[in-house]
Every structure is written in structure tokens, then in C-alpha cells.
Length: 354
Image (cartoon, rainbow, N blue to C red; front, side, top):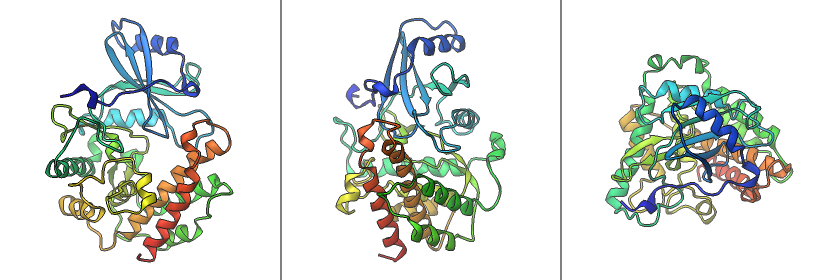
């Protein structure tokens, strides 16, 4: 397999640079017989927590830490993410092996953790050059990725020791209240109030709530594919928002990123995963595939679809808030306010059945 299709990190942004010497000292206290010089590079895929590739001699690691600037309350909890992945690894083998967690904020300015590096293909906005999949193979890839989400939702929570993550019934209500509050707090002058959408979600809470282990950010660009067999999922990344919650809300979150070939021009411009390719399931087909294989059914998926889009609008606005208030200089966030306006418009159209 062509090495060019493997996902690789790039140069570290100046504003995100860490003290490599302190990182190396930390690693040496947790990895026996670690030898060699340290070199750090940065993955550019995410807009939330920062992800670095740390190479020490011939041994690669991944370091995750929060971005600089004001953070949403409860977000960017490195210790929580580390413990969830550590607990899930024995029952959900697609989680990377955790190595060490650091709660000493004096080292790099925040908590962080280090885990194994899963080398492979990450399907971002487009599949890497050199990797050509037929429509039939693309459909198999799509189904394999969805099967991992279904498998996660079948995990026996009691066997993981993560029952404390759940707060019992009322998950859907808490999510609507929580995301509504976060949006109001992060709102800037150039985005809508989203009051119509927030009120509709509050008034249309589903009665048939279920609880299971959910990822809460399950997307193609959070999976790692095997380079020798590009339709096989070897890892699932980014467990920052994982919790015990409603599986259909998890699916709704995924659908918010699912840009298909016949979507409008603006939605296509913000596509960040290859769900437009010939052979990929449409959003409607995804919901049908998921409900048939998982057994989690609903008469009306509209609530979950609107929730996923609104939640994405809040996440985007929280990131834009940091840029608007000059807490980051990353220019890729400059026009995020436009996306917030669009997502609000899309939510309203779905609510009205258009």
C-alpha cells in the first residue's frame, strides 16, 4: 500500500507550540527505556482539543491537550477522556492503548494525556490521493464504520466501570437545556438567537429515551482505517464528549456532519468527510441501516436530526467565540459565524418539513 495514503501530521502552529523538553521528561518517567531525540508535529483535523504526534527516536506517540483561551465549562477534560478510553479498551478494541495522564498544569499550561499512535488512513473531507474505491467498496466501508457505532451502543456498561458517567433518565432534556445555555453564553452579535429552534426541541422531547455508551462525535474523520485493507476500521478516536446517553441522539450528531452528493452548495462547502462519494449511504439510508441492525427504532427521526444540527451550531459558535475575542489567531475560524447562521436556517427548514 502506498505510504502517501497514511494520515500524517504537519508543522506545529506557533500559537500551539509546547515545551518539547518537558514533554520528553514526562514520557521518560512513564515509558521504560525510552531513547532518542524528540520531534513534535501537529494534526490539523480538529478544531477542539489539540492533537500532536510525538516521535521519540523510532517510537511514535499521540499527545492530546486543550487549546489555549477560554474554554466551555466541562469541556476539554483530559482526565475524563483518558479514563473513558482506558476503561473501554478491554471491551471495545478500537480504542487506542492509553499510556499516561498528566494533571500537572505547570508542564505545558494544561492537563494532557499520551496514548499509542494508530497508523493508518483517516477519511477526511476527501479520501487520500492514491486510494481509489469502487462504489461497492465505498458502501462496504460506510457500513463497516456504522457497524462500529452500533457495536459501541451494544457495550455492556456495567463491565466497563463507567456507570457513573450516566445521570439516569432525562438525558434528552438535559442535553437540550445544556446546549441551549451554552449557545446563549457564546452568542456574538452576528449570529441568530436560535430561540425558535431551542423552543421546538424543548417542546418535542422524545418519550422513548434509551441509555447506552455513546461516542457523541462519531464521524469518518474520527476513525482510523487499515492501510492493508482500507475498508477495515482499526481505531476510533476523539472520545472527549463520550458519555452514557441516548443512542439515537448519538446518531443524530453523526448525521449533522453527513453531507451527501445532492445537498445544497453551502453545505457541500463545509463537508469534512467523504460521505458524498458514489456508494455512500444517504442520511435516510443510514438511519434505516442503523435502526434495522441495532434494534433502536423511532417513528420520527426529525427531533434527532434537528438536535444534531443545533448542537453542531453551538460547537461551531463556541469555537468562533474564541476567535471573535482574539483568544486564538487561527484564521480558519474567521467565518464560522456564517456556518452558525446556515445551521440555524437548516434546522428551521427541517422543523417545517422542507
